[in-house]
Length: 245
Image 1: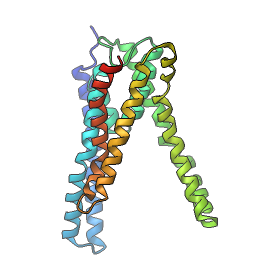
Image 2: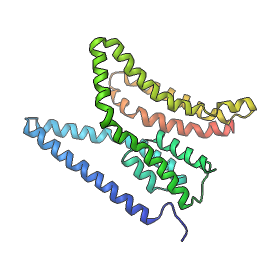
Image 3: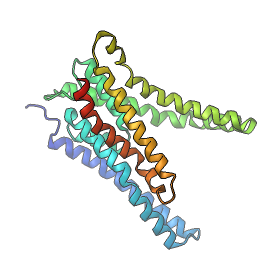
Image 4: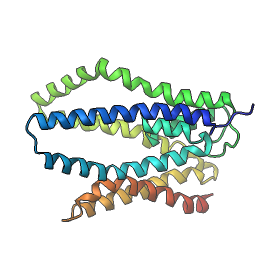
């Protein structure tokens, strides 16, 4: 039987896992609500907080849907749906899938008939690697947190610098991926500039959203800055690719 990345069996397996996660979410929501009432929180305020949170989850959800669509070209819908519904992000999942496919001689976004072996390989790279964070946090997370608190207690300025440096280091790993094919311009090719220009467009959109959000009455835009820059960057990739080839 020919393997299908959109097999009903895969949808069933993923659906069960996502359903379990949703049940957990509802369970803890109910527990939190009841605890809030128990400690004397106003029911009207709780409803307002819940409604506000529900509205502002639309923005991240848009980014997630776009991410699923991006990955579904090669991997079908079940696997991206699972990865981005439980533990995952577009930046990590795309890089992991691209690297796994590249190692097998495939080109991300151009795979039409992925075999079962290739699918399992990509799924393993996307899933197993990111699980490191799940068990690593309880092992060393508290030690790192105590170390940061210790530094901040001794010198608040250096504590902030250290925290910012860790964040910048994490971002640099993804920025490096954007520039990894930049050297293609030295051989007369321009396709390596595509991710660079897409990043610039996304950054400009994010900056514009941030500046607009600082104006009175536009604070809500902060929650939509990410999907705006994401959608804008993807849309810009089309004419940029046509321009640079």
